[in-house]
Image (cartoon, rainbow, N blue to C red; front, side):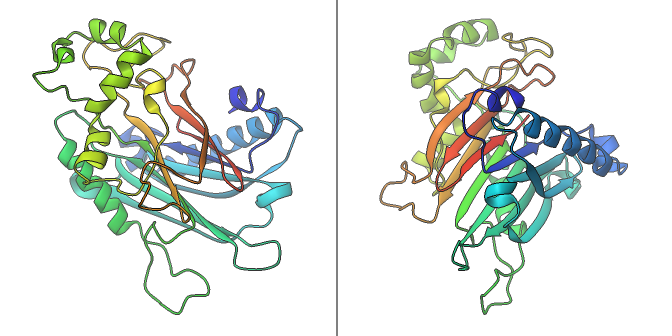
Length: 317
């Protein structure tokens, strides 16, 4: 948080911080998640306010945690933090027994219009999908399970009493460790990159990464097969190096047992986006990158700064 804020002249209106492995599974199942997320909240809020360009103040809009998947959303007091209404949180689990080491958590809230009108609804979803390269189909199942079971109460002012999905919103941000990998077809020259060292060396070049993106599972499933994340947009993730899997404590060394991949992603859409231009969005992608100095995880997480009517900062540390 501090690394980003100290270099930007304008403080974001909304800050969303998502965790996919907040703590080890056995500790999460023992009920320690709430205590851990509370300590994270105190630290993150202090860092946001300490490093905001003009020492802006922030309010915690909502927090939600399910075992290791957690989400904290903050609002800047002089813009949206003191205005939000109808705050809602939900969670759902995936995987064996739906225990929660995989799954999704969500926060939804409404920012009323200045004239007192309904305004706009924001929905943030942080998710952790099934791991391993060969389990792409399971990741897609996880996504649809989250979409179908992460349900919110009816929106204010509507006649229906039925629960609503994550798509009943003005703006949607879906992010986290989505775990999609890179599959090279046998006929590709890159299919011979079985050694992590070779792959990491080649992927230093942005021109190569732009070619490799065509084999990214998420991109293939969304754009070619239409099987997942249909209607959601994304920034140019190939502009930076793969976020997984790094050696713990290392800035730029990959783990020798996993081929590099872009597992950590931020997807988004807004109500003014149109199906006629599925790759374009009225949410402007001001920055989409990685944080190589974050070495306490085997993922190098991205942070994303977006501009629409509001400035939004999303991080998945």
